[in-house]
Length: 174
Image (cartoon, rainbow, N blue to C red; front, side):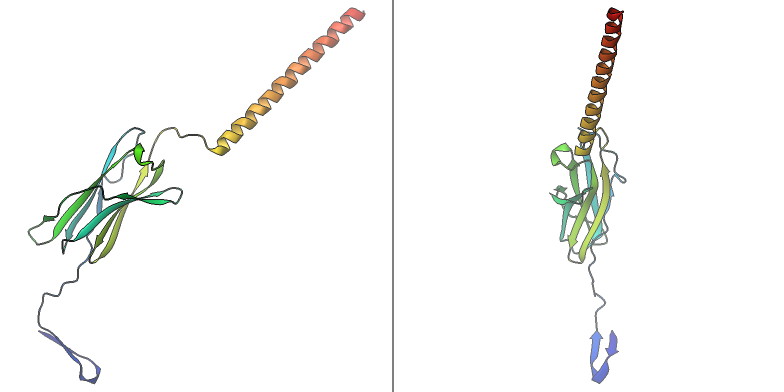
């Protein structure tokens, strides 16, 4: 039993040692680091949340793109709670990543755990390898280069055709 005294004679007595302050679980994303995603490949990502109590926990996924946009990916496939011998619980969520999700070429995958003790997040960077579509700037540069080459070909053909005519006319004048 512990006693504490405050101003004006206020006394607080704690008689039990079963004072519990819940904390959200630690989170782990597997595999870590994430491998490079090949176009057409399905990547399975798992979020592990071990050692928490009480057992109420909501796991979800979020994607933050390189362009700054964020969107929810839902809960994935969430396992039931597993209880350890020390009375704590663990839970996991599995998410399959592929082109159908439309995630873009890179960004952060985040696992979010909402618990009575607070919210925790764990993130991993996702990168896709392969050839990307040209940007609008790339397309503009290709048009400019094509116009320059077209102009050079026209100029050279005009130059050679003009010089050939002057040689022929000099030959016939003589």
